[in-house]
Length: 512
Image (cartoon, rainbow, N blue to C red; front, side, top):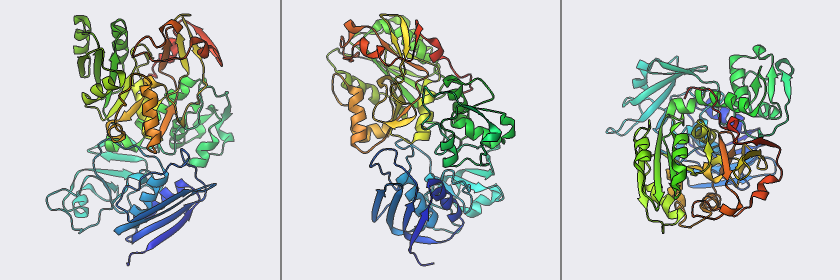
């Protein structure tokens, strides 16, 4: 069939991703695609993603209610691959870390469009490929196609094959039930201080597969009773959105519900695995080291590393021995006190082997699921930088913890708590790294992300408590650079707990 420019009009991004799925069954190739989405909003004004394929030209415009994208290619591409390029232009997806090549067999993409954003090529029997390189690292096929036939689809093979049937995804006799699409079934818009709104499941009239409008309708619902009337798929998707089923409603219960579904019932980690994470800690205050290392040692995320920079002092033997006993690798380097904070973070990053970097502040408090929270939020937001909201502040001089949800949780934003920043090594390098400044390094990095057209996402605040030591300590060192007085954090407070509110730091009782 002669190449042509294909033109489509769809109602929303869900429909576009489903169109990618149905197009995998077509042998049509195109020189370009033009797509109008009637109802879509950008994660941030003016943001446009990358098509992820070589292009001759592209145009993207967010209209008053939707999106219009036009892209042409130097060579003809399968129709599904052209449409997937538009998906990436209007949908944030995680990038900046290593991933194996992924290829889809014809007709294998689920009808919901799950993982449509990953599609760049379709396995074509008899296609000419590099004789010295396998065609792909992972081939995804539909269950009716026997795994033994995958060599007929790709004569030069793949490292592994994943077969899918309805919600069951299988590789090497290991299977997982995939119910959740993190680009659809996610807690976007769910606030830390939502008013309780519990309803009966039978009153909702939910579709069997929750599309984006159905997910949006759940945003103000905190709990559902009578969930036995829901299918296993509906239960999983509802919980991924942060709705609590048949249990007392709290933010902790909501976060636990979404965490287990997004960790265990999504395709992304089953296909690609979870990325490795390096926690970077720069400190010039040895008195805080024992406590912060204890918090980091308790992290439940499976692929961790710690890089510790002591700023103007050497480690004592006790801390060095503790680092050697951690379940994950720990790297330490001492640097002179005249090195500023931005330069110190650059040194820490140069010593890091993790695909993702997360900044740890020496005096703040971290729950055991903290790193998990950030990695999962990155998966469903597709943002270049993610962090937590500044909901819980411990005022050390008054020995009390205030709940102050002035920054809305679960939204694309311009600010996150500095002690919770997570970014990929690739994105950090592309941005130019940490600025070599003595203070405001967090704000400088946020500005770099936003200034380069990237996205920042702010997730919930559980598992993190920001510490204020008193006005006398403000700006006392290169590490503690805040210039805001304690009185600022005593305004707009919704609740107060005497002492350190350890409930904020409690884990979710999940397997990693």
